[in-house]
Length: 378
Image (cartoon, rainbow, N blue to C red):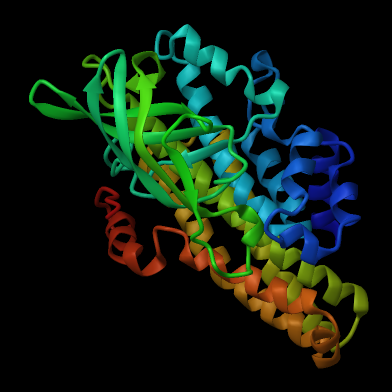
């Protein structure tokens, strides 16, 4: 399939050998808890995709990132789901690194290890709602000598078992009130524990479990604060991170649906008009996501960027459902009976609807935005 081949070519260019290595592993093993896909991701340089070149990474643009994630996800939706969290978090962190004086040297040194050492970064931020700095804090903190003791957690938190670094939003006490900040916490820190949360076999390889923080000590120099002269800086970055997250997350499910449609077209069953319909629905989703990625590359920001990626995501969500249903019908009942992979891929397309914010929750806000009001995510 032409567009999927193009996405795989981009993945091969940035991570030579990764697609072939994934293809050599049966789908059930790729998607199983503790499967090999995250190790392969590290082996072929995956963690450095969005890390700037000056920090040892590839520093690709949004369009290339969307295609790489689609290609990986066509082999392993779990890998796509897990690493989307890593990619959008690293993109946001390095946006901070580009701001003069925003990160101290110890923080920069920690980030500089991501690409060369293949470090995986998990996100303990609340997802969605980029309207209030780091959104709803995932943790609370109290002052102690040399830093803070942090309590809280995140569920589900992808990469829970393989993460090397956890980022978390936190409410810090200051002057009788609270300020919002971002924490950089090595995953080996005492007080971090992982608890089983994801019980479905769909996307089980993404390690989306509960991460709890119980009196985790975070030194003061591992805290990225909002500064009085730039109180909206973290808010701006969260908005950017939100747009990247929605774009990359949608790419995951475009990849899963692509694997189904590719099989349907290759087998040639059913009428040519039905095969065209499956391909049209898929390619419309591809165009939506890639259009949003190009807009981000061209500098679209703020409410316009958030609305663009949400439109792409919600429209793609419907198109992908229709494409996968048609592909499954074309593949036929015997194929469904004989290959558990088909049933798995059908199920793996569906979770896009569960990512926050939901279409229902966003309906009024988007209608208001389309009619000239500010975009308010609730």
